[in-house]
Length: 407
Ligand code: FES
Ligand SMILES: [Fe+2]
Image (cartoon, rainbow, N blue to C red; front, side, top):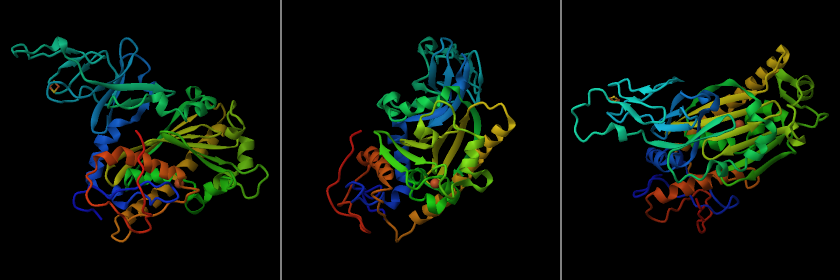
């Protein structure tokens, strides 16, 4: 499918009703994957951890964002920082793993650093000329907390985090995330491109086919989509309390029975009590607000056809064993749903490698959010793709003028 002079086929946005879906080589091109690292993942907010991991001065953890080694730390003055975790001597790690320190020492040759990134000691460098460790410090990226989450942006051109999360913040208020307790999670490695896995989150179209258990727990008459600037929202209502066949999963019995045992969290409004708000945040996070608690999905591209997905769960502290077990049932059910998603994504990724499939079409009704994601991703990448020829694609594509999305 790849044509000389281009990295990948051109995607033309003509609205969800007329556009073809993202061409298959966007899911398989190694060259595009490398360009995404540089031009997309460095220019977004990424959730790298939890604020409770860096609550006190000296607490730190390390992470990687778009090939950048990052050291997240609370400094002596209480400021949250994202320092470059690359020693200024010969690129060793300033810190490894997580923990609490008064200062950092590179394990390679022992240079030391203050918690705010200033160089503290450079033993063995006494006879080195034109070398002023007193003026040196680790480069720093943007770091910010939102609720229980720590966010990092590598490049300075990323809009403020408040803007990035504008659609989600008001909805998060009633769930009082700061009062919930982190209950751990689970990590998957999925043999598909990161966009394949994100795409799958973007619609409820597949739910009746891929998730029979979830399907029985959602009311088909109430499933809505709405678009934000950097995010979108899907809302799925639980069935009417007296509706027929409302089963979340066989293990839970009926949703009515489940809710009788485990009422929604206090403080939620009516739609929140009776359904699920699923938010996607560009590019790689989803926020899932449930009557029972909160689930964050963090999606990380590992390689062009390998993606990591981490589920992190927050719930209210429950005093009784039966309530704790019901929380565990919610977690298990979420993991079951994801296992179904992982399986279909792996198959569809194989489909993207086919020589006879190039591009599909959107359901104008049910794949609005998918199209919205493709608009944003394409707006990031298109300026960096080499273009030759007319970029025309066949296979159901409707010709017309392309439209760009302002960044
Ligand atoms: S690389 Fe860090 S002290 Fe040498
Ligand atoms: Fe799914």
